[in-house]
Structure formats: structure tokens, C-alpha cells
Length: 150
Image (cartoon, rainbow, N blue to C red; front, top):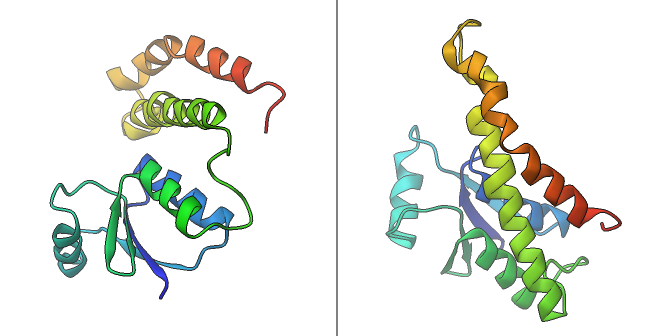
């Protein structure tokens, strides 16, 4: 039975789980959490009362949180590419870098995007470059850590 992933395309942690599924060409059905489909939301709430996504349904068992989903897939349904390095020290560093990338860079850029504000002279559009300036050291730190790696 293929997996079912309950997620929303704009949620960065859902993207993290999707990358693992797509990378290993794991068959799954995507259960889009959209307010236009209350039945999917009701099913999702029964699986995970905390209502945080993504949630992977694996043969009736709900696996919540993106990192746990990836670890579950790597352990119980390994694909052609390992998602978690075998060396525990490298795995810990990998998890730290991934969460840093998602929380600090991707989410911050999306929230701060100048395209979110309709009027070209909006105060937020003008303030956007100033707000992003403080994240430049974070990008430099990540770039330094990733140099020479895949």
C-alpha cells in the first residue's frame, strides 16, 4: 500500500519530507491540506490531534514531523539514496544544518519576500532589504560549512 502524505505545499517542513520521498522515487499519495477539502482535514485531525504537518501515513500508522518521517523512511523503507548518514556524528551535523537551512533561511526569505506586499511603495517593501541584511551572516556561515560538500 503506498504512503499518504498530509501536507501543504507552502509549508517548508512539508517540502523537507517531499524531497526525501521524491529523491528515492517512493510512491505516495499527496493529501493536500486545503480548507476547500474538509474531509481531508478531518482525516488528518484523527491521525494527529496536534494538527501539525506533515504527517505520513504508513500502513495505518501516522508518522509526524518531517525529520521523523525521513528517519522512518530511511530505516523501514530505504531507497536508493540514504537520507540519514550512517555515522551518527555526521547524521547529527546533517540534521542540524538541515533544520538551520529551513528555519533560518528558507522560512525567513519567504516571510520577508517583497512580493508579499502589493503596493510598490509599501513600508514593508522598502524595509525588506534592511530586514534581510541581518541574515547575510547566516548565509555566509552556511556557505562556509557546505563548501566542498554535496
